[in-house]
Image (cartoon, rainbow over all chains, first blue to last red):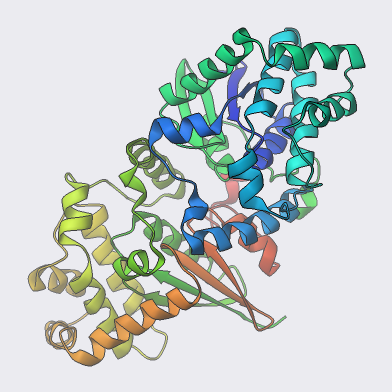
Length: 229
Length: 227
């Protein structure tokens, strides 16, 4: 087994609650597994359209189950996820295009180190999937950006850039990269092992992923082994 | 703490159900539980819930083939794709097989291992050695391998065409629908009189957390892979 640092890419959209779970778990494993984690904010709407997939909650029983499943998983994984009061409106009417363009602008500016991308993504997730707050208006994204540690002038610049053609194109391009990996939803995780990409869908394949990349799965909170041993 | 009852609703047409089945069978003596195997008909679940087979989305179908191979290796289940999965899963289907397995379930009232063994032998045919599971001769072969005698197999094949068995399969399928199932495997854990439902073969770690047991990986007798 090669001991070289493995590259793990996470394709995500903040509209997806399972993506948040996967994001938090992978962030926690950054210093546990021998990996380099790369964030790829992308647009889930484009992946659904490109793959011909439909949102799982279109099947009523599945929708009911997903609510229960997310609540249990959030508790087990220790992620402060709460359902928004009007999930359908938040996910399908308002959507995440403005937010994902904003986060893409953060990626384009944070060339060295991804902490800012991590922090901004988390703050936007907290709004939509924890405190039931808007993520479409510039003032909402501004608030998230400030909480993540950006200055007012940086936030202003990023909000301006988020509307620019290069950032719009970058988001499209990242979404297309996910489709090139045959994505049909998010989170989509690509593990590069010995030059070969191994693709995983969802936030429930970490134990299998560990097996495939030659690492150890220590549960969703690797610093808190008690839940596991 | 009292013994928890865990019900597994499954259909042999479903490869993820096989994985869930083998893992739960291995945990029978590891977790403080009583495992109840509930053979049912996946076609009825899909119709009632309005769900569509996941492989209808081409990218999902491609992914599932890879996902199953990796999971089978990790979980140590000898799963292999049939040469023509569409023909096997959707044209031929599992109705006679699930009626036969229902007949085994009805005959075996005393919590023996026949239901487990017959289910496994049928799964091996469809999801490992690419053999038919629709013809009486096929089910007979699976039954003999599972330890039934020729006369028992014959009796079960007769029973599996009877109205009471057909009704029983419908009834079990309806029970899964009442739990709002939309696919298999569907696992219902009864804890303190309250049912907790889990879909898929990828929720065992979460299940352990919810029922107050420990997850030791898919091969609990071989925890090396996990610790």
